[in-house]
Amino acid sequence: MNPRIKGRKIGITMILSVMSIALSIGINFTLTPYITNAVGAEAYGLVSLAKTFTSYANIFMVALNCYAARYLTIAYFNKHDKEFNQYFSTVFLADVAVGGALFIIGTLCVIKLDSLLNISPELVSDVKLLFFLTFFAFFLTTINTVFNASAYVKDHLDLANIIKVTSYITEAIILLFCFIVFDASVWYVGVASVGMATITLVSSYVMTRKLLPNAHVEIKAFSVDALKRLVGNGLWNSINSLGNGLNSGLDLLMTNLMLTGTAMGQISISKTLTNVVFQLYDAMSQPFQPTFLRKYADGDKPALLRDITRSMSICGLFTNVVFAGFCAVGKDFLDLWIPTQDTAFIYQLVIIALLPAISEGCIYPAYYIYTLTLKNKVPCVITILGGVANVTGMYFLLKYASVGAYAILITTAVVMNFINLVTNPIYMSICLKISKTSFYPTLLKNIVCCAVTTAVLVFVNSIFNFNLSWITLFVKIVILAIIGVAFQIPLVLGKDTMSIIRKVCKMRSEK
Image (cartoon, rainbow, N blue to C red; front, side, top):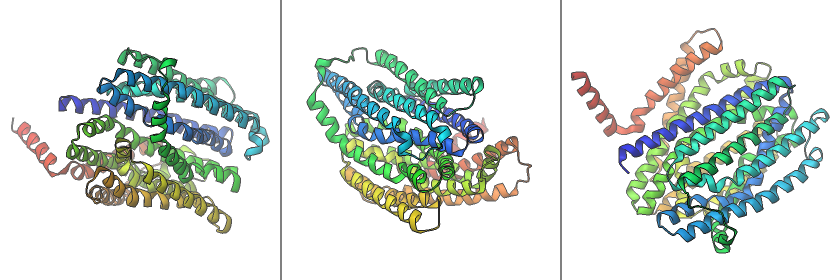
């Protein structure tokens, strides 16, 4: 593909990814104060916990689905039509079977939910309906995997992101209708999730029919060998997801069982904000993955390494700006967003929760190396060990130290930064058979950039003397974002690229 066309496609995909994130942020930021004010912080915490429970269920699906796009893409480009149809049919049929079983198990858990969790009596019926609908949305999302993979096969992640934007708009419309027409209740979030998942499934199916008209689900094409290959390679990713669950997914559950409903709500609010950053670098790194796959398939290791480090720098840049910006104006934002809550305490929680994002935002694009090389056992073991250490440390801090909700986030920050900065960069280099220090210049540059950018934006913000309002906050955010991006771009782009840009600008000015 022409480099200019490829760059344009990646740019369009990134813009659409940012649009979908913006919609997600808008929904969450509107929903959070409404639920906390109308129903209470505990109810909002239970909304997040319902979504967390589906992430536990997804651990079982990861083994089957994480390599679906890889095998489908390779079979398609090698023109192995029979093998492609086997993977296509096997993934869909297995998703229906396993996802359906998990949905039934989830429904049985919902019946006894008030015995499993600490729920205020007046919220029990609404929360049970919320959990049921959330599990059903999870099932719909699960069976969509093979259709969504067609965007990877044909390198059309722009279409996948258009579908994602449409689904978020659908979710927003449903939530708006429910909360305007009816009295406030948490189960509306479940209805919106089902609507969003339904639109995504139908749209992805139509996309598959357009991009891959010869792809069909056939029972006779189901292959036990293909299933074993998918699960065999993906099993370690499931174990890795379990480790990630131990590292971050159990925090709300442990808060619910060992602290209070209010504390769970406060942790949930902090996670809502940090999840924005995680969504950001996931969206920024995703457009590069088809390129990584092609470079790896071609055996062009220098080009692959160059693309990976470049994507690391770009993702790190945006993560750093968000972190530095929140350090500067986060307290003002919380005062305006959730004025009825303890904003000073939540601000501290968010800063602690964001600490792993500094390293993970930069290293995240390189995680695709494990998918490319099918070497995921070692990182999975490390993630599990880190998760066990995290939960153990969390438990003892909650049990024997007087640190309260801080314990939930401090242990996660320490463990995740160790994994992101020590174990992953070294093993990623081993997987690609390159120098073990290959990723450290980019990582260290990113950390220094983040520290300096944070200091600069905090200082610049201290100069402002605006009366607090949404308008003045928006003005400050725009100014700080421009400064943060401009400050980091020379380091991210490098001297050669900046030299070219200066020459072009000089030529245009001379004209």
